[in-house]
Length: 514
Image 1 (cartoon, one colour):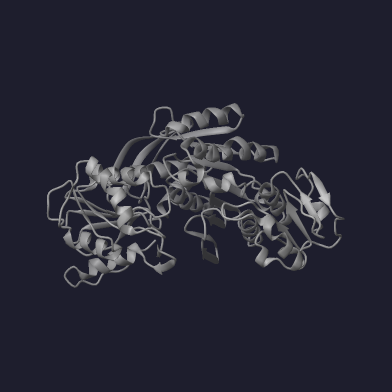
Image 2: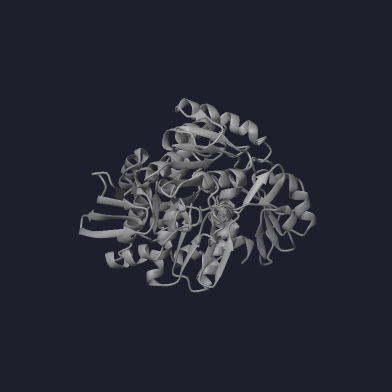
């Protein structure tokens, strides 16, 4: 495709130089990867500005550059108001606008994105090959690879969608992060449905405040769904009625004449769960919606997972799936990596779960889910990440102090910070909740111990637990690494928990599955 075709509709302010007639080989935003025939996009990032690398790109044979501020280099430069937005739209066009040829579902929200995505993937699979793009992995039938970020940069995203379309994929579900929305990574995508799960404190180190964080999430509904509608789709806004921001978003979506389907346990929900039943084996409820009612169940544990199942159910109803198809999809997902994932043990062992909860609200939610299902003590292993929002650290401590009987305060991904310093910032929250620091876990709760070594902390919690106790290992979920200083070391909570269970009485225990 020629550059003159790629830049149509980008709001080009000026073209500096004569547009080349050669075909564009690729779109690149990393100057180190530029080769002859590539268009280099100069993106202004948090740590660096791509405009500083225009000379390098020119020296490596760039065909042209996408810029916000032109330079006097002998390089064709396409000047646009926002190079990130322009790159996203160019990538969509360069890769053949793949999202227009498949069913595409986007899922945003602070918590629940990954679980809802796995459930929706199973749903889409009922009617043909389906793909998934998310925090844990990118996959479609015959291909699977680990994700580097929740939502890829626009070039990689459109390339992945094009690859899936070429492989015969009929529907794709993707997690849409607030960063991706703020940075226009999904601007070229055309959605058939978008899900809003909830909003709680997270990523304030990037967004600055909760309103800015919400405004980023809101773009999926206020901008991208209307654009999808103008492109010929009939997109649905699937919004959690149980979340305070949900009613605001639902009203706005309705005002934009979007098909709007709210879900949850709230009486205001159009897809409403009633008569919920929970156990350590899963959950079930009755689903009432305008066209009738039906029973729904999921092997996933906890009321928030029943809510996640309702989200997938609402997506299914919005896309005209039958209740029996929806139930088949829910039954096919026994667990989601790192999302209240059970670590199998032997008779007499405590129930052990690994979860990605790394905010105060997520911790409070998962602990509240486990509390009524726990016959004995509820023990929580947790920490806070380094080089991230410090304001949430005592809030996380308070959530665990309130929700757990006993806690093991440990290290998460300390990154460049001292783990003990991070732990010291969490402790006031534990104490504010009435938990006292003790020497061991034999004490009555609420109480906590400190153990900076995460492997030792996990072992301590599991070895101290009885058969009726439940151990929650929170914070890292599916991650198989720990970042300490400038090192990325292999570390998997599920592996460590399985090892600790094995050591209880010398039993051999299998590793947790997905």
